[in-house]
Amino acid sequence: MAGVRLAGIAKRFESGGAPAVDGVSFEVHDGEFAVLVGPSGCGKTTVLRMIAGLETPTDGRIFIGGRDVTDLAPRDRDIAMVFQNYALYPHLSVRENIGFGLTMRRVAPAEIAARVTRVAESLGIDELQARRPAQLSGGQRQRVALARAIVREPAVFLFDEPLSNLDAQVRAQTRGELVRLHRRLGTTMIYVTHDQVEAMTMAQRVAVMHRGQVEQLAPPLEVYHAPSTLFVASFVGSPTINRFAGRVAAGGATPVFEGALRLAVQAPVAAVATLAVRPEHLVLVAPADGAAAEVTLIEPLGPETIVHVRLAAGEEATLRIQGGRVPGLGESVGIAVRVAEALVYGADGRLVGRGAA
Image 1 (cartoon, helix red, strand yellow):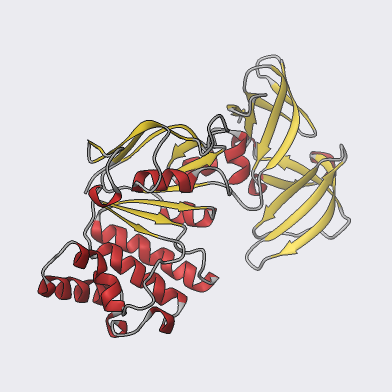
Image 2: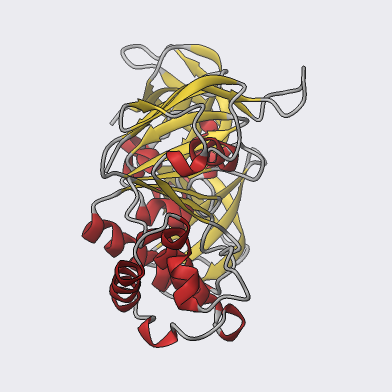
């Protein structure tokens, strides 16, 4: 096992062009399950490919287990990678696909057979060993790709959106299997996805990427409840976080956010600020007790209801209601904030304060 450290890595695909990855530095601890998440084009897959040795950094260094591997070939980095498209050899059987890396390393045939059988049994694909990839379902192919990585017993596993080609039910099942696999093996895993559900449910720490940089690296719940930038706040969570433009004004003992909503905050006075509130942290009250609003859309989702409103100031907001009365379409309501959960961002988009409870 080994940790992974990136020191100022950057990647430009065209000389003089904008960097796909721009000075990224972070460390994944030995035995940790870390997830890189972000929108398409944010640089997360390029980071993973540089760790794997499939792309060469323009700048910076990469360390695995304390060893500088920046200039080493992929085969010399002691990593195993699971690809989005599985990358199975169609002319080989499942058994041969799983053992392919060991065969190329000239491991003894008896040892290959024993290791392949042991891993195949652990993933529930032992009975599929004689089949070809074309005879497998998407979920089965994914397990074969996992088995091929596991059988090598690498220091680090790298996953490039491995679940994106699976249907929703199989994807949810495989998420759990990967988490249990990590607990069993205790090996460092770095996982790339654009799916925030995968990031939030699987990771011990999440790195949220945007425009080639890491905006925040923290445990999932910290990313959700204390996003360090307005981009992270908006990217993580569904429905997306509510954003209200305004300012922070002096208000006696406690500054006050002034906008479509007004509340006391613990934040520096500023001419430009944004108040961000998760849908579950907005609550319905009597019209006279909160900001006046009209219900414009209701989305019943079983255990919860998503309610969209238009405030008197013209801004839109979304509430998540779990239990309690659901208002009717077109109804006039009041909107209040769970003050302690409100977040305040400055003009540069960085977190500067919270509501004053």
